[in-house]
Length: 369
Image 1 (cartoon, one colour):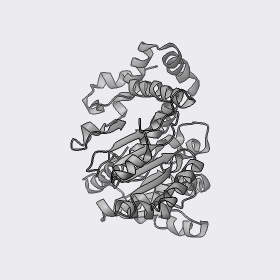
Image 2 (cartoon, rainbow, N blue to C red; image 1 turned 180 degrees about the horizontal axis):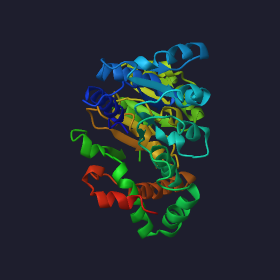
Image 3 (cartoon, helix red, strand yellow; image 1 turned 60 degrees about the vertical axis):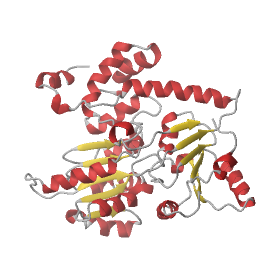
């Protein structure tokens, strides 16, 4: 969401290393999507150059060489895919902390991603995500099962006690009870609370893309269909407009190059595949976002919008959604609103820190739900 989760982790690790209770030096592990591992390396070098960071990626031969560097590292960054392929190597280490970036990757407890990361040994566990609930409340339980195994009970029991009553029956008491159990362990920050100087986000239904281009703005154009982006590319080329383009086939190194190039002022248009470029990109060089087609999950669109609307943005960011009247797109938009209401009802912003609770209040959280 662009609220500085990466920077928080780096600061936390640095403060732990500088603390009086250092004990035996152990590295902390960050597990991120493949496309973001080098972003982490760059951020650590930028904000804490004194921390030793090791990236474990690439082919098997080079990977084993990197494992030899773990003991001298402060932060080890690897990918979900790498964990799955070499879990036995990671299990040989006891990490100081384990951080999951884009923790929605373990939203389904039955996937290999979810099963494997729960085998990592660490002194503490953190999940970083701007979308803790994308489709169903059970996704939240799966993330909690990584942080605090068993706290929200089994999938079956959670569904019967919380998800079904809340989603199907609108049970306010069940919603309140779930909130009571998860709030002490969630820090949800909103942009208006974290960064007061961020300009207001403006949403407007758009008439013509040309209006955006002629206004002299720098714009991100998202679509869930690469075929749609291909049509846009053709129109731009006919008008001799230069642009950047990114989709699922773009290599991780090239993604970083494109981001730096765009933020540096090269070209004013960035065409991006919604699923491939909706997370992990810092594109504060743009001041407009256009969604050509609606995605049924509002969290996915919000993540895409936040490529521009994040820490470092100095300008007002305008967001345009193109929705054709009396079509299925309108129904998708209505579904978005309902899902947004559910997410906001379960996970609310504001201070509710564990340290502010009494011992009795904390003990009650662990009583039978």
